[in-house]
Image 1 (cartoon, rainbow, N blue to C red):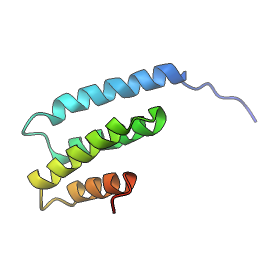
Image 2: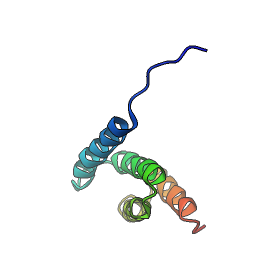
Image 3: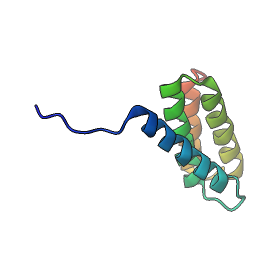
Image 4: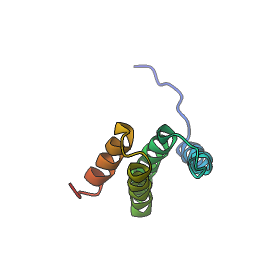
Length: 91
């Protein structure tokens, strides 16, 4: 098989941090759609997995709980919360 170039792990994690920082600023706006928060939650789960940071999982869960309160009729918020509950083994 042919080796394909990949992004260096340090660069990839720095890019992930930058994506999280950018989305966190957008999600903090009261008019941000639930899909922005859901994407931020996904990225936090990914970073938590790669860095072993429970604090990222807890932040993701707090965002998901807030999304359900803010968008109770939107299934995206409920799915995001369900993912964080499963991630934290709170199902």
